[in-house]
Amino acid sequence: MFRRKNTGRTQTGKAQNGSRHQLAKRYSAHVRTLIIGCGYVGEALGQRLVALGHEVTGVRRDSDGNERLAKRGIQPLNLDIIQPESFNSITEVYENVVIAVSSSRGGREAYQQIFQTGIENVAAWLNRTQPRSVVFISSTSVYRQTNGEWVDENTETKGNTASSSTLRAAEKQIASTNCCTTILRSSGIYGPGRGYLFQQFMKGAAQIEGTGERYLNMVHRDDLAEAILHSFSGKGGMFNITDNEPVSQLNFFKWLSESTGKPLPSFVPEPDPATRKRGLTNKRVSNQLFKEFHDFQYKYPTFRVGLANELENQTA
Image: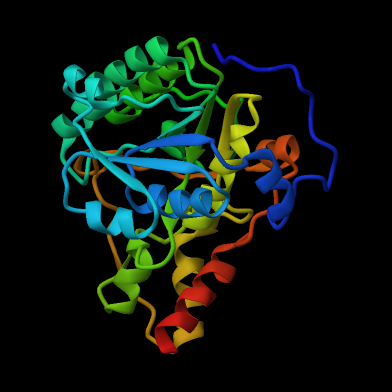
């Protein structure tokens, strides 16, 4: 179960994204934050925290990105969460811990290792060290609905894939630790240099699957990083992090086509769900709970706002 402090909700308008002064006051210097899985989202979060005065350590499996982290003011630390003895290399005491691990595009076996064995090891370490606040980045892929219906945090997460079952078990593992835990279920992440369907479209390699009616749920990397920062409040809970407007695959590509003058992608048959690591779903994910609970506003409330920014940067 989630560990929460009974602090109540913040007053409307008191903790908006743009309020750097209030965030800096809440998360001032001498706060140590550990980011386990300091990749695409973790680096952006780390930079934001460094700017607020945090001492940030970023954990990566190998040393490939160490120099880049150091240039951003993030102390790199290399360990493999699959190996329990690796955690002996963590010698500092951290107030905040963010778990943003991934299987690095590996197959089902790699996914299982990270989100089962690895998360079990992370949970054991958390119980030993008991940081003030723990944030685990999960995924809206735990919702397996297929009829385009709206889902929220109270929607049943009955799984029909091994990966969704594994991820739900990982959520429970982290939530059961002796820490104040927040689970953030993120939708598909895009942003500078990332966004699979957007990049495929720009390369002329995109395809519209079936009739194109299946919904896409997306969130900009910077909004996810900001949501993590707001989750250090010590309240805990489980929340969906996604923008305000799910969009059908067809309408997504229509907007890109109209915005760029590039042709609409061709239609292809709907793929076999068994060929996808996370299967296929069709749902619209609500973000209302997190916005209300944290008085949170998205910088990129729709894919159009976020991708317009990306298109502008590409043509600049």
